[in-house]
Length: 379
Image (tube, rainbow, N blue to C red):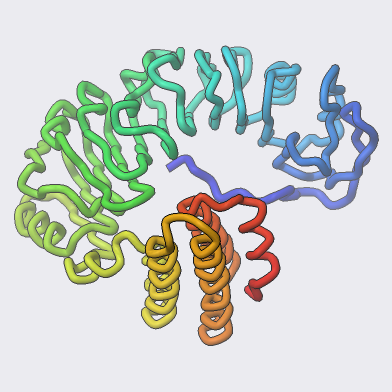
């Protein structure tokens, strides 16, 4: 996988340096490797020219995080030999052919064309605007690792961008379901991973895998809804990873491939009874940290969701019930945090996402719901 877990401003060399990209001087670590140019602490002018010569004071920068229109970032990345470029809200054409970047992450609803350099190894696209988007890569992406993350698209919009017919590795990250016909004909594809963001994780058209003659590694994550009998014979397959699938499916696949030479790895398999109780609960994965902790969080969510769904259709009673449900969820999580001491940074961020998603489900004002959260939570 090309996805990295990189933190803020990692350093090789000690000491600080003053830089001024055009919005006033700021002090940063001299040896930082990751330069977040959308970070207000770095300070770039909201419009007008940017003094890219300041990059010379930061010789260890290998990653640039950028947002918006070009404003010279491509030329600067090329001049400084930047290896990793992470660009949000990109628009129109992004031409990176003059750079030596090895990994690029892009998103932007107005993105229409991407030109990649000969050095490219990995491309990540968040919610790519298909079918409008076209990618120009050397040899149609031969040897490229491609990641496609969808948070908003429906299954009809999921497809491989034009121009990438010869990729080596593909990671599809759809929401709830995907048809594998989208990978049909990728003759050079050696690795395929499908990870679902939300249940039920439905896989269809598995027969399309037959059109992948070079496929050696296949992985399904959080795929709880598919028929193991639909899995075709894959002569080149060497490894199959099933992470977060029904236990019955894992058992059937392992029995079928026993003695075939294919290494089958299964982890975090779920019983039908467990899925019936927890599949659609956003705290289901907390059970991996502790069964009691995760179960308590699941029950707290179910109580809050049920109260919201059963609230009066209209009127002040509905609002009161919704507020009580959301505040009650936070109070319950406070108690869970005290008892189990397992709401760490990752779980804290997840809990906030769950709370805000529940507020959206209730059609409540986001700022008001966030204010309740700030008032009530202790974790």
